[in-house]
Image 1 (cartoon, one colour):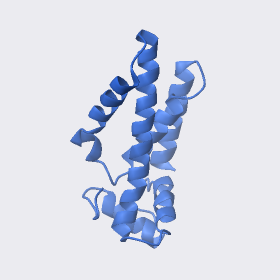
Image 2 (cartoon, one colour; image 1 turned 180 degrees about the vertical axis):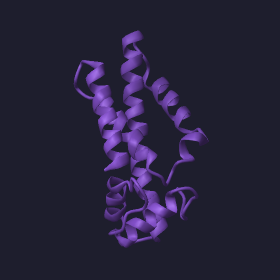
Image 3 (cartoon, one colour; image 1 turned 30 degrees about the vertical axis):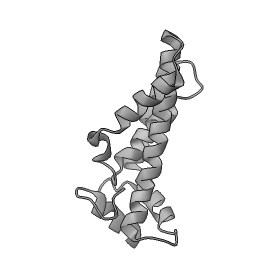
Image 4 (spheres, one colour; image 1 turned 135 degrees about the vertical axis):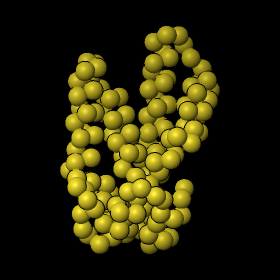
Length: 140
């Protein structure tokens, strides 16, 4: 977890949330609302609290990736939970996943995994809900 502000939109989003303004079009207000919530924590710097937001979404995405991998492998054969755990955490160890740590993209990853792994049996309904939530997260 980064204790400082990373490049790209991270500084813009964190400062917009801290000052209660819009970052830039489209502004990502859903992400800035989550940032504002974590700014209420009584410890750490503002940058550390902003990193905590992305950490929560990253851990949620890793957990849902584990569940999705387990559900997929269960259809093929009866998997061992250790194998699924190793497969999930080996994918989450890539630096390409963590390069977007303090940006909006982890919210979209988590939201799409959460909606796509819904209770509905029709895959296209889950995909449409995922696309809807990602568009809301990016533009609302």
